[in-house]
Length: 306
Figure 1 (cartoon, rainbow, N blue to C red):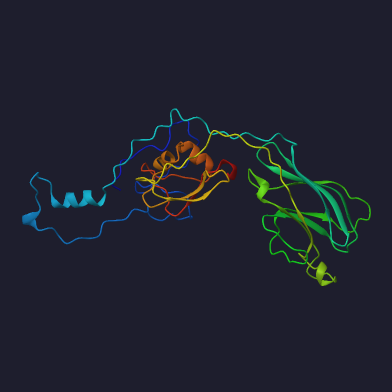
Figure 2 (cartoon, rainbow, N blue to C red):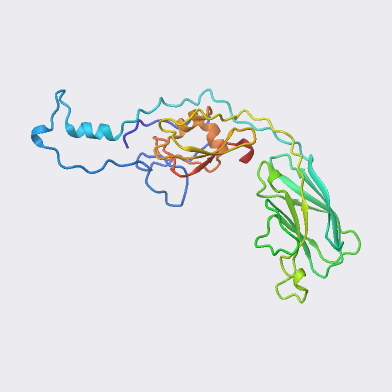
């Protein structure tokens, strides 16, 4: 494809899929990856046989080919000294959010705690559940606010049915918050809703998916330490994409790949290693030796958003 083949990582790098695909490398995308996002030179007229040679003996055709690929590939990236990416964990059992839920009319009550599982995941613990409603009650977490009386269009994170009418406090439940990510603090709304069946003979306000209570969750997640701290060194050859989001501290958070971007050069732009870039993007795959990334794909640069 006109670029110097190079190795993506040394033997110490995390395993990434390497599949030969016409000598070009793409970031994983659809099941059938498109051709590399290189811009082919426009077809030109057949050269004049009488004018095909230059003073130094080069053919006009070879000069045309050289001008179509003016990039000078950067030196082959070395991963031999790159440290393994790390992110400190929160001790298992650490409470990172806690509160009480009460529906506006006092029909539903329970207590909740959000705790660390110790492996970059979290669980919700519910206790003291009581309800005087004639329908089962469920609970789940959302990023966006909801209002009492709304109808849910999807279940939310950690959807769990607490139970039906229980005049006395019910049993406790621990629910994994799958999909919450390394930092769950964006899930700021705990929604209690009706789990009535579609044919239940109940008032409209108790119908399926109706929001019964909305509680704000105030997270207190301990600070995490990491040795991966991307800093944007600015657009450059083979790493000319755009930073589309930053963290609260101003660090680059996400990056959109540009045509002709190479994974080693993108890593170098942000002062990190290829192995760290792969660690930040668990689904990344590089095809072939040229390290091409799939143009238009968004790469994560924030360890807390893995």
